[in-house]
Length: 215
Image 1 (cartoon, helix red, strand yellow):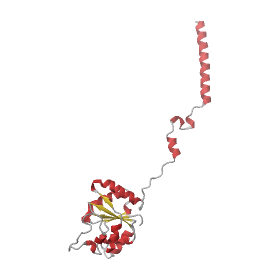
Image 2 (cartoon, one colour):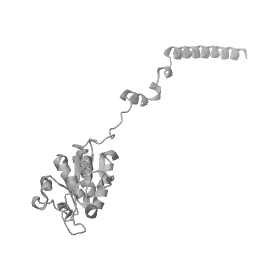
Image 3 (tube, helix red, strand yellow):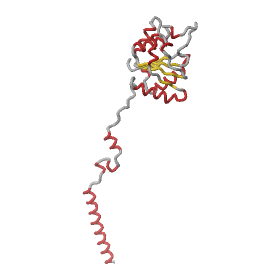
Image 4 (cartoon, one colour):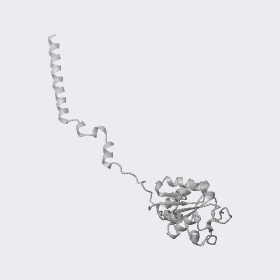
């Protein structure tokens, strides 16, 4: 499915920032355009292939990088990014291989990782232009990010629906006296009424005069 955005993050590093960002993205994009938490791969499926397909269905990836993203450790104390089966590494590596628009999102003061600190397949990430989401200006930073994303991923189903033709709107705004031709008075009828009133008035005046004389 084209026109999607994949949000990649570590839960123990930037869960809250990722959740806030997803809420903001939902104000602009439809649910089917947003991918996140793709870690429920069905039994028997190749999770590397599944994740790669999910990433490949998107036009952009947001890599949420917090202070612990680079050096997060597993239960044995090994750095997770050095494990080829690490979910975050699989997601980012697949996006870089497919030339998806990858945007590092720096949160909680985290710096962009240096190339030498990354596994070989992830080193191009250090050269991607990053954006920062600061806690104190999260709203404005997120708005700037969405504005940049619009050039890559068009929101689905957000177009403004067409209204009534302009002439219909103007008709609704016309004064009541101009609303319809049938409501306009007929000039001939008005003249006829005035003439009748004059005649009746003259006749009444003559009658009153006669009555006055006879009395």
